[in-house]
Length: 348
Image (cartoon, rainbow, N blue to C red; front, side):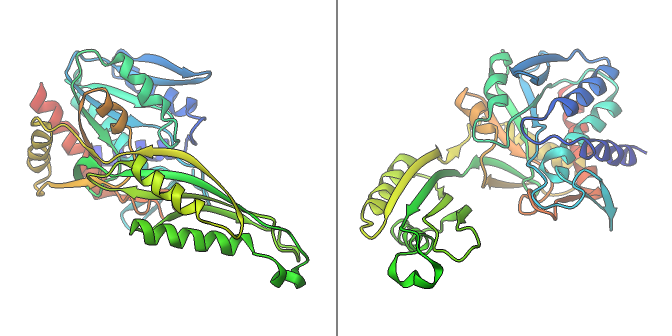
C-alpha cells in the first residue's frame, strides 16, 4: 500500500541526521532513490562536501524542498522515528521531510518521468541559505516554483519579513552580595527590549539570551539574539533605524548593537499558479484549499528575487517544528502524496 510506503520513506529520512552543514548522507539517499526511478540527477556543488540535487524535466514548474533540519534542540532520540496515535515523530518530520517523503512516494507511484523539475537544496535552516541561492543558476526556463514547508496545509502567496539583531549590554562585575552597587546587564537588557517593543508596537522575539556563570557574581555582560516581524507595507531598514535610535538613548550602561539580517514582507507574483495548485489540491483530497501567509523565511525569498512565481505549501504544523513535539500525521502525508500525484497527472 502506497501510504505505508510513504511512512517507510519518511522513517528512513528521519533516521538520517541532516542538520545544516551535514546534508551529504541524506542527499545521497535521495540521489539513489531518484536514480532508481531512472531519473537523471545532477549534483550542484554549494560548498566543499555539500551539494544540491536537480532533476531537469524541461518543465517551467519546479518543486523545491530543503533537506537540512535544525539540530536536536532537546528532542530525545530525534533520529529514531516513533509512531504513536496515527503520527510519526522525529526531527524533520514536519519541517520538511514529511513533504519530501510524500513527493518521493508520489514519484515512485507515478512510474513515469515527472512533468515538473525537482530541486533538493541544502542550507535552508541558516541565515545564508546558500542552497536555493545557488540553485537559481540552474533554473533556465522555469518561472513557477512550489516551495515545500509546513504551512498547516495553506497555500501561502505571501511571506512575512523579519529583522534580526544582536545586543550586548555591559556592566561592572561585582561580588553577588554587592549587586545593589551596579546595574545588572540582564535586567538592563530586558528594559531595553521593552522600550523597543513600545516604540515599534510589536513584540520582540527573544531567540537567545546569555548572562552570568551561576557563581555568586553579577555578570559583566548580557548577550541576546532578537527578532521582530516586518509586516506588509513596511521597510525593514526603517525599523532598524528606529531600533538603533532607541538603543542609543541608553545612558546607564554600555550597549553594542549589531544587525544580523533583514527581509521585507513579500507578496509573491500572482499569475495563476496558486489558483492551479489550490484547485488541484481540492480535486486530489476533497478538502477545501486555504490561502495564507507564511510567517517565516523560506527559500521562496531567493526564488522570488530571481523573478519566479512562488507558492509555499505543505501539511504539518510550523508551530511544532524545531521543538521536541515535531511530528506529522499519516493523514497529512496521504493528502500530500495525492496532491503531488494530481499535479503530475494534470501537467502530463
